[in-house]
Image (cartoon, rainbow, N blue to C red):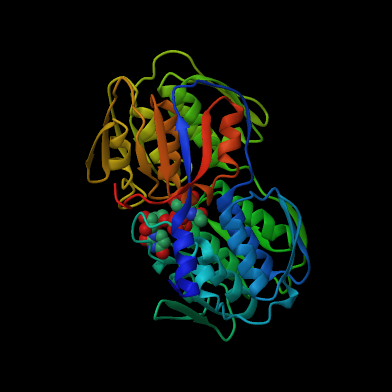
Amino acid sequence: MYIKPLFKIRILERAFVDKFVIKGGNKLYGEISVSGAKNAAVAIIPATVLADDVCRIENLPNIKDVAVIESILTYMGAEVRRLSESVLEIDPRGIKSYNVSCVEMVANMRASYYLLGAFLGKFSKARVPMPGGCSFCDRPVDQHLKAFEVLGAECHVEEAVIELSAEKLTGGSIYFDVVSVGSTINAMLAAVKAEGLTTIENAAKEPHIVDVANMLNSMGANIKGAGTDVIKIRGVQKLHGCTYSIIPDQIEAGTYMAAVAATGGNVLIKDVIPKHLDSISAKLRDTGTVVEEYDEAVRVIREGELHRCNVKTMPHPGFPTDMQPQFVALLSTASGTSRVNESVWDDRFSYIPQLKRLGADILQQGHIAIVQGVSGLKGAPVKAPDLRAGAALVIAGLVAKGTTEIENIKYIERGYENIVDKLAAVGADIRRVTYKNTMDDEY
Ligand code: EPZ
């Protein structure tokens, strides 16, 4: 029978898929090294567009989101050289257009919104398709656009494309209605070369905000106050190249900390900044887990019973929303009832039905998950609905008796470098297997 080539390719794509297969129940012992921060990397790579020379970015995580941004810049004319797994050299001087027309690449990741700030800052114009990426709820960009307008840009949104245009960018006073990581970074990217002084009030304070500001300052920008509520940016005319090393990933570190607390064991988590982990360490201590801090490492030890605790997600320095699903997984086998309040995103509990398939007892009431600890979980086939939800399913799978198979691992691998190798090295029975997809898609 004759099959058209395109149809054939589709069959192959659907026929072979990767999944994680976890045999749970092992305690974790040993050392895990943490990679560079994803959420800093996806802003710092677009920031290189603003430079008039070569930028060398070190300690990049080797993950899909970084590869996507790398390919967008290459498509736009930058010369990108990979010097090693974690080092990129980017020469942005070949970028001549502000029209980011590679729609499919951009649709692959939410953080492509940083192209707006970077291209606006460079050309006083930008044309970027609306971002894609994780879809745990509506992800508005009104605060991003508000910042660009304060700097003098006109904003048009048409057919899922954002177009920004200014005669000249001029500093101004930006007050954010909500604390927003993306808006704060985009405002910095657009303002570094705007004439005069820009003030950002009610700014986000996450470690990666400080990292992006430090990187821009290393290119000659004049940004003060990053990491506080008020950031002041004095515009400069030119930005030069730089060599910059990205901070360790707070959420990757926190995910492994939660995994050790969940399974029990004793693991040294290396290459971290312990201060960035304060809120996570504090909550782990509430569960009876020991967290010891060293200069660039934390040791997590859990020997006794896990205790219940309440968690409320908040902007930094509060407990990070990006650790919420992992903590719900952890608390699902803690003694007693825990309340987990999600106050950053409208709906970030889409994974709860998947955790319930493993035997967790969780009731969602609006923004709150009520987690009734159970004595054990049992393995089952599940699907990762998004990145951190996928990480939560990995943690639950490590705890569950029997075999857990996790599909949709593309979401997990968007944000975690070598997660299988890192966990296997501390004793987890986890494998990535390619299988023939003959199953019904829906669980
Ligand atoms: C960043 O997303 C992170 N992504 C997210 O991590 C993280 O969950 C989030 O910050 C909060 O910490 C990246 O850094 C690439 P926000 P971002 O703007 O910037 C509202 C992960 O798992 N808001 O800080 O898109 C919004 O609805 C990802 O690694 C507006 O109302 O988040 C939310 O309620 C997922 N208008 C709150 O602000 C806007 O214009 C915080 O969002 C923008 C945001």
